[in-house]
Length: 82
Image (tube, rainbow, N blue to C red; front, top):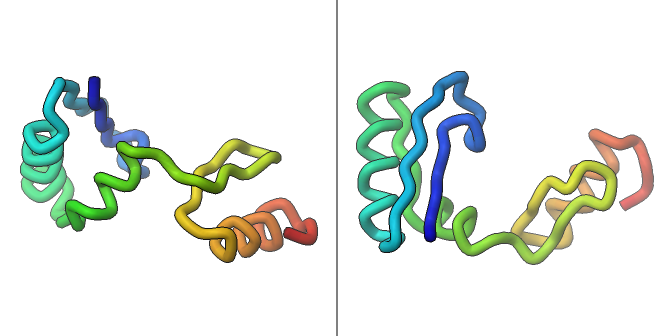
């Protein structure tokens, strides 16, 4: 099952879409965010969110697609050496 919610992407909005096929979920979510929030997501970035990230923050469990992005997050948000 695939699920995307606006709150997971920083919007103060209760919209969520869930389904078996990622392509359908992506299409509904992209349509909603474009119309309601004026934001166009790149399908590949949403797919990465669905699949999951290889790098997780040990402090807050945030997900990142690269070791460098995780390290920068830890350095700036948690003020610790990543």
